[in-house]
Length: 188
Image (tube, rainbow, N blue to C red; front, side, top):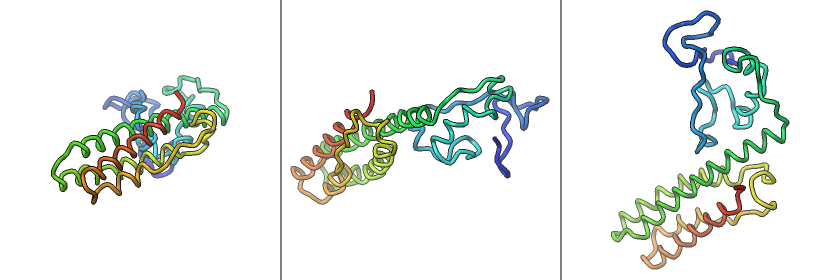
């Protein structure tokens, strides 16, 4: 499944082996699952536009070709692909929410206003990634009982920058709680 213009991949190793397009032994280098959904386009050669396309690849005949699949591929329906994708989106969103809360808690404890505001400015990047992950479709796979998560954590954190310390901490506390509620709604 190497698209036109993409570099060939031989997997691990430096030597060229017969029958392998590129250098290497054909072995696969699997990336970590946490935050995998945030790394589009996928694969080293960017051959999968969406997370679901990357998952679907493992059910393809291209994957089954030796040496990667050794003649085997995963049997997956569209629902299977969506469920695996939702799981990976949930992992990514939950990690982004966890890290966003670490930033917010650090900002709550920071006394000089400029330093606290610097911590808060880091939060929108994390919250943006969290929104992209947590509010990803299809929701029926992502949230228990089809319940929608509350939004507003991002706005609360952003609005905290120019407030007094008590107001800032209250808004950051609200943002933390909203992220915790959203995380609790995700499949476990």
